Length: 173
Image 1 (tube, one colour):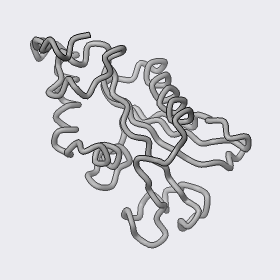
Image 2: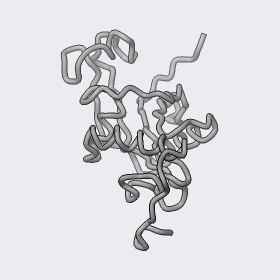
Image 3: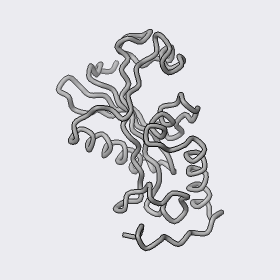
């Protein structure tokens, strides 16, 4: 039995690793301090879904915008301090589980408004215009093909299938 978390629900994607810029097609996407990219936060509002207040399999199976589907807002309208916490939780989960290249973490607020980690998806869905990570990338202006190629480039670099690239001086830090 688990305690029901009655607050807002969010999901946050994380991509990369410390040396991501060396193998990336888009080194500008990565944080200069740690090498990771945090996608915009997506909020899931299941209050009007087929399973009210629960992001169930029945709700997930509906197309975005379809009657009974949750509302997806990306980027989520959150206070800067909450955004910082949510992105930190997602990054920390990625690091602690040693996720490779990409992950998506689901977080819900408790009764006091504190974030609670629900799960981390180390193989997040990649269905265009449907999967949460794809919605996050799209909200940021990252094309679907660019997202997939980026994940592949990171994996190829991790396995030694790509030579590290030279980083332009303006992107070094």
